[in-house]
Length: 85
Figure 1 (cartoon, rainbow, N blue to C red):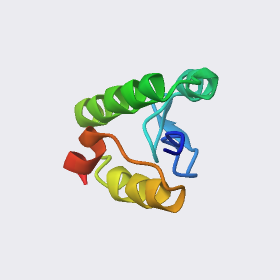
Figure 2 (tube, rainbow, N blue to C red):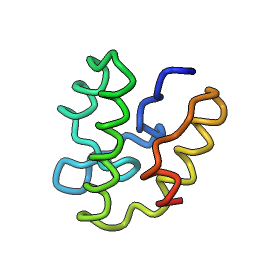
Figure 3 (cartoon, rainbow, N blue to C red):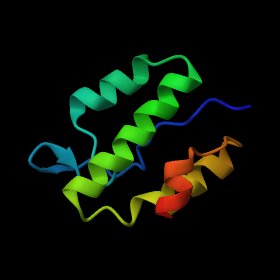
């Protein structure tokens, strides 16, 4: 199985109190994700991010874009992403 891809959807504009308008990650979270090597840790991070997006609001565009990214990289998306899409 392919490695869980980064939640980044290549928008990278930190305008919502330090959160990216594309994926909701902060710069610190982006750095942290890059350090995660095991898929179970990456999957848990993506699950956390979906919850964060739900709390922050205005991120309905993210899940469909991330699903496309997962399909392109032949990676199985975590369940929370499939539910959000």
